[in-house]
Image (cartoon, rainbow, N blue to C red; front, side, top):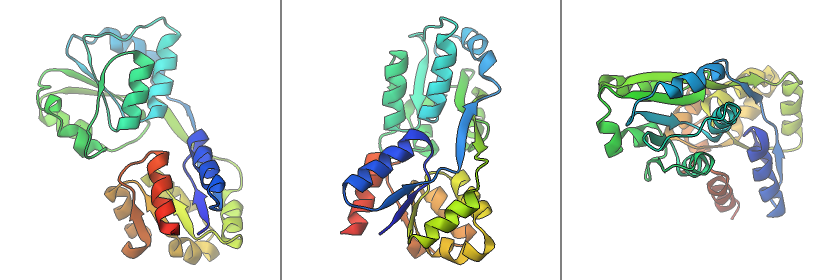
Amino acid sequence: MNILVTRPDERGQALVESLNQAGIFALHQPLFQFESGRELPILSTVFKQLSAGDAVIAVSKIAVDFATETLAQTGFHFRSDLQYFAVGQQTAAYFSAKIEQTVKYPIDSENSEGLLALPEMQHLADKNVIILRAETGRELMAQTLVTRGALVQHIECYRRMPLEENIAEKLSLAKRVGIDTIVATSGEILDLLEAYTAEEDKDWLHSCRLIVVSDRIAQTAENLGWSADQIIVSLRADNQSLFEIISQQVQ
């Protein structure tokens, strides 16, 4: 098994290093990089306007990084009278360490559906809910909270910017060195894989085994041309879970 890890930034590189140390051939090829979001300048003002009991939701570690670094520059301290949430355990632990407050998260399903099922999410009528995220994302969370009476505001903390280097050539190189498995941790990554891969390499792309981190991403993969029996869904999105599921496939 030869792995192409598309997870961006140092997390993708860390997964590749773990796989290589375990004797599994892996390459790191991110398809985009992260840049500051356009709404970070208003973040401090938005937080100051929140009332006791209002909620703040972080969808990723990247959102946490950009938000906390921006607020630190203003001398902002996270209030203990707000409710803090994250979509997954790893993000929650990271968020909690950054803000020194309790952050709640869904234990069984680390996704929007799991978060929406939390007891605290059932009682947000007339409460302000701030969602820290990228320039785009799933609308399910916001739409559901609005139907429950919450006043929801997205804050664009970061933007995904496609890399300007020759990705098509690098993906073609991945084909030539025998990559047969691809790790894709978001639907956006799948879309970019499809867009960047040269037409003559599309058969190779869709023949690769695909490791994804949710049923939703798996469905996106099927829609793009992968067959269901080529797709493996990890129960969690953290590197350790991905490493374990890859290791199981090698055995």
